[in-house]
Image 1: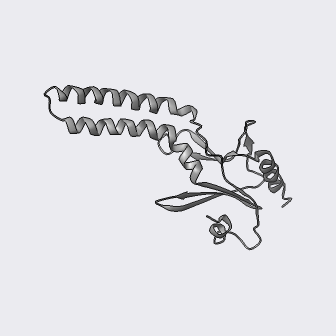
Image 2: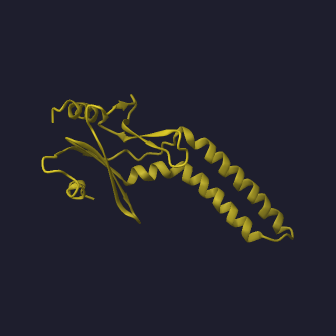
Image 3: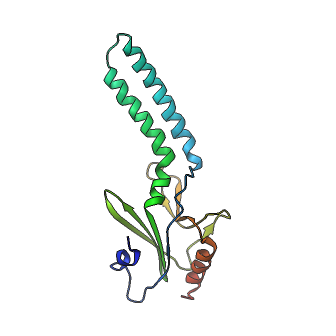
Amino acid sequence: MNIADELDPYLKRDEVILWQGRPAYSFAPGVFVFFPVLFGLVWTGFSGYAVYRTLEGGEFFTVGIIFMAVGIHVVLHALFKGMLIRRWSHYALTNYRAFVLIDHPWLGVDTTNWPINHRTKLRHNNREPMSITFALAPRRFFGRKQREIGFEHIADGLNVYRVMMDVQDGLH
């Protein structure tokens, strides 16, 4: 996927792409993975026991297999969703906005953007690969808390952070 071609319809006349890149898509489960994985393992365990009991003469074997599949899906989704999203993600920074493009294999390209201006609160972690956050959005299921939006797991994070600060100051 060529990022410049994908962004061309969204760019203003005087908007220039200053940086583009991709995250490192290594296996890096987040903090909130523990509870879904635990729930999925318990779910799979109970449904596996139910399937075992139906082998001894009970009914509903198929229903137990379906419940086991759901539990396995919950575990795998919690562990590998972030890695897959990072694998399909592309980032771009212009002199006005930050773009996140997700190239879903079955849905096409999903493009979102956020303004980078003097009111934008930039934050970064001091780890390699670096993540830079520049916006907050409500969580889909837990409306009270907000999730951070940004460029995750980028290799040249310090340089991108400096360019973002220059954009904030109006130097680009």
